Image (cartoon, rainbow, N blue to C red; front, top):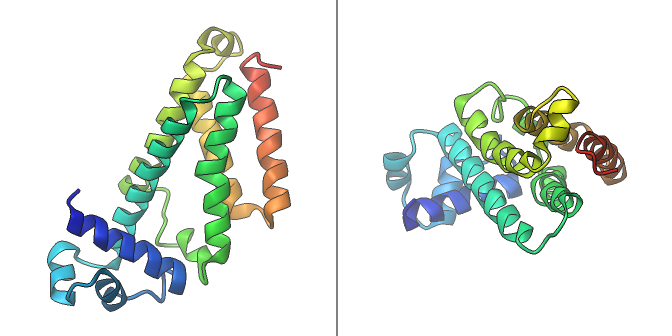
Length: 187
């Protein structure tokens, strides 16, 4: 990704966070990025394309942040906590502050799109690598690291949209982690 694309996507993230996805316009994004609308349209066909690219950038940043933080963590439990904080809790906090956060679920953030799958896959792959350490235990429980990773991510990710508040999110994530730790043979 070149510097111009990064600048555009950072502007899109900021504009969408401020005005909401629905109300953000190509003009708002171009203005925030310090470029003309024709320049923006020369790179991105529409707002949906920019939003999808911005979500991919956010996901790549999360994967990088988690990977970096895992270097100092010594246990699976610590790594799960880091993952949940970076990939779920922070996103929950951000979407709760957006004027039209529900738009991320309806239309702009469709889990059946190829882009959505790409965005999620990087996080699922991180978890699969983490759970690989306990492959034998998981197989004995009738599952695999990849299957547990997909289940764990799908569950935790859905909580950021369904939890009513931070306390409920924390409870849901703690319950998911406890169950995962049992499957991993860690408790």
